[in-house]
Image (tube, rainbow, N blue to C red):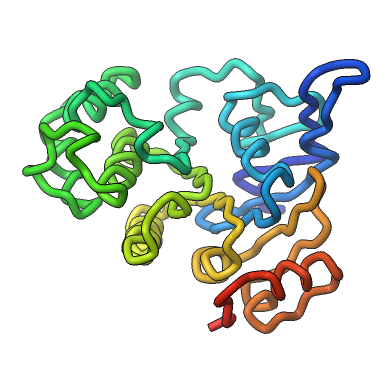
Length: 253
């Protein structure tokens, strides 16, 4: 039996305690195969981003288990494990240091992982994300939103991870730029054999980017289906059908 690359079982995340406790993630279970792109979709506050943050080790899980290649993930991650799984955040400006150049931020990522051949790696990754050498010594405020997100993707990929966790990677961008970034992410996945977990409230993005998806509501998964079934509008829950109906401009094409 093939062990999934990512295996999340009965995951619980609780913020606060006692009467102030909030169950942000409630018994969530799913698996992701190596090379697959898996989507989490739902309304704001449904727990999607919280799952990514627990998976990457930014917040603690309150219960359940998370496994990578069959090995349980503890809260404290060693350098090798952090390298295997990188995250790209929603706000490309907020995730970049405003007083560091692109070169400094890419160099720092390599230094943290103890990776050599810095010059070649920086030149290569800037070319791969469609920026090139002229952007290397610019600051975030000198870049457009789409360019900043390309830098954020470059910073995640420069340490050569297996997995990218993508938290609404295009929602802060202009509509004209969103498709460019999504096309870049799809190309990089195939070129590098990456595994993606993508969080989005946009069903069109999920249908384009993902092989399978889970629909979340109030911290729990209410339905899991393939992207093909989503495009064909073959959902089994009223909530998923409501999301489809509410998704403006979603054609399933």
